[in-house]
Each structure stands twice: as structure tokens, then as C-alpha cells.
Length: 365
Image (tube, rainbow, N blue to C red; front, side, top):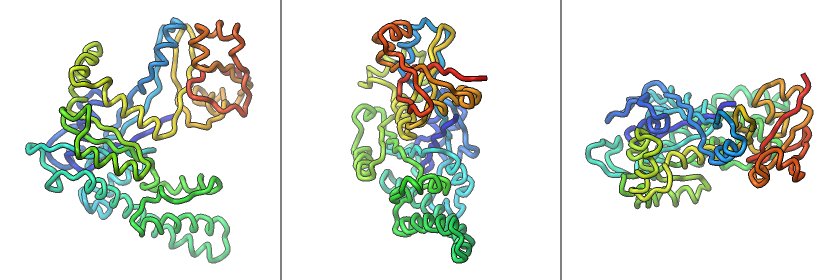
């Protein structure tokens, strides 16, 4: 099961630099001109989770396999992207394919790096991108509604239902608001998600600041934090320049380097975890002498579906899940100790997997 976060923003805000650091490669060319990233680069990254190391230590597993998240580096959007400016249509189509949006905002001054709008203003930049996404959604909805409303007038129930959802989204967009603000019922949720609107995707704002402000933020990032709070959106502060430098260091040197800058951990670790949380994902584990492995499922996933992330046969033939909560696994020094303490549970098809569960699935061939 793959989950993708698309990195978006205006040109020259640090998207490709951040992506390079994330993937520890130079796959995305970072250059001082718009559209240096023509094809979207995709990189898989491990999701940092110290719990996995604890499980390995107890189980003496030979191999450690973390869960992963994909990041897509999408070329810079500009004003008029929804009308095709700057190859906008192509890049907007790429955004439709991701599960969440990581919106990088330039929050640093640097006369050597040109700003496509002439000066640094992260709130204006955010509005430019949001406007282009809204205009693209409006155009998409208006096109689809023409034929759908004709069917609805004939009394077709499904067409009437979908037209109602689309008009609900369109009313917000016309009012200059993203479609994610719509009040959607549980019964409408699946069809709503299938509309695949750009402005319904969850957003994480990333404030790219200068090195000196990496630990504390600055006046620009504070503006974005205030905006995110109003929108109930997520936000983190990083210095892409620092992250790129950290990515080139040997792992044993990174902590010391970060400490000299007053940072407890790499900003990328916070970014990856924030992206994971943004998608409402949780982790369960399988543990044994051969390997300890983390698996990703969405919050609210039932045991058979979780088993299916390992292999479809596990879901089809699911019988039960032997489950130990992470804390109990650690507290009782592993599976045997947890069993003896009565902390292993046998869970059936209706069990909703909890974050940190250590699981072993029984299934029929």
C-alpha cells in the first residue's frame, strides 16, 4: 500500500533542495530558475520510528524493515497555472495523483536567489497556490456538472446525489474557499473522496527558513503558523539548506551536527512523521528472529484488511490475529513474556488495529 505526499510551491522556494535531502540523492536538480524540475521525481523514505529498534533489540531480529512513505517533487507552480501557465496543467494533474500536499513556503531572504514574485511574502505565496488549485477544481467541476445535471433532471438518483455534492464544493470554491471546508456526512464521504478535488487533499505547510532560524523560526514562519492555526492545518519549520547538509553526513555525525545548531532532531524526521500523521496513518509491527517489520494502515482499519497489507491471501483466509500492545511487548520482554502475563489477545475480523500493535496473523490457505 503506497501513500504519496506531493511537494508543491512557487519556483525557488526550496522544494527540490528539500526533496534531495529527503531522498539523500541529487535526483532533483536544484537551480536558480523556474521549472528546473520538469518531470516529477518520486522518492521513497523510511518513516522514523524508535519503537522498531526496541522491538529488534528484544526479539534479536536479524533484519529491520521500516514502513515507508513516498514524496513527489512537483515543479514550481506560478500564477495562471490553472490556465496552463508554466506547464501548469501538467503539474496540476500530478498533484491529483497524490494523497496529501506538502506546501513549501519561502520564509527566508536571500538576494542571490530570485523570488518569482519579486519579494518574500509566504502568505501571498500560499494564496497564489491555493487560488490555482481552487480554479482548477472549479473548471473540473463545471465541466462534469453539465452532463450530470442533465441526468439528474431525468430523475436519476445517483446523478442527483453526485450533482448535489459537486454543487456543495462549487459553492465554496466560488466563495474563495477550499472544498475541504465542506460539511460532508459519513454517507457522502466515499463519493466525495472519489471527486478527487485538489482542495480536499490535506495540507502540511513547510516553512523553509534560513539556517539561523531553524530552531526558533522567524517572523515569516510565525505568519504561516498563525494561518495554519486558523485553518486547523499542520505546519513545521525547517531549513532545507541544513537538511541537505545533514543528509550528506554519516549517520553517526548527524546528531552532533544538529546539536551545534540547537536542534534535537533533523527537520526531515519531523516532516516525514507529519506527513504520516496528515494521512491519518498508523503502524503495526510483525516481529520474529528473521525480521522486525513496520506496516502502514489507515486509522480505523480492521484486522483482515491490515493482514492484507502483508499478502492478499492473509486477508482472504483470515482466521484471527494474535495481538500484543507495543507497551506490553516491551514491558514483558517480548512475545513469550507477554503470553505468560496474559497480555496476548486473540482478535477477530471486527478488531480495529491500534497504533503499535505487534501482530501475528492466522489464516486458512
